[in-house]
Length: 173
Image 1 (cartoon, helix red, strand yellow):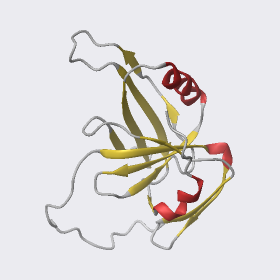
Image 2: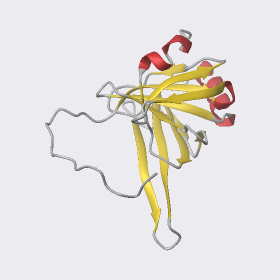
Image 3: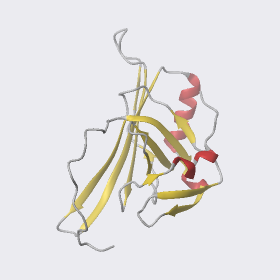
Image 4: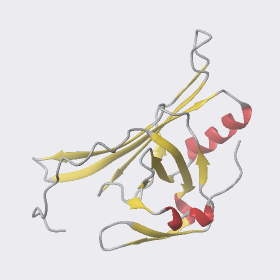
């Protein structure tokens, strides 16, 4: 990849929204191929398993894709992360979280702008320090705050829903 800049970025319209709507998980070991277009968009994924959809409540969860640059070493990578909040502690969720904690995964995030982003494309994503709790007051959250992290050589690419939709599991808790 060349190191020369190729374009500028304008201010644009105020038509963007923060937050995420959906998160999809797939076992990295089940993905045998990822097809990418010339502009870097993911156009297809060969997956022998399923993508499992998780739906957080509005304004609770986030995705990060932060550049990490070390000038002295001449290195750059992207620290990717998902903070997923799930409400209500339940046995079935507990059992799935045990599996999430042990897995190396690809994660797809649907943001509030209806764009999908693939995290962990090369190295996968893993659960990091997370929290489970009942809260203290009646109005506090009873549930899970799950944190996933990964390090990638490039930022998360956009992915078209059609690239993975055939493998989305309809089973949900």
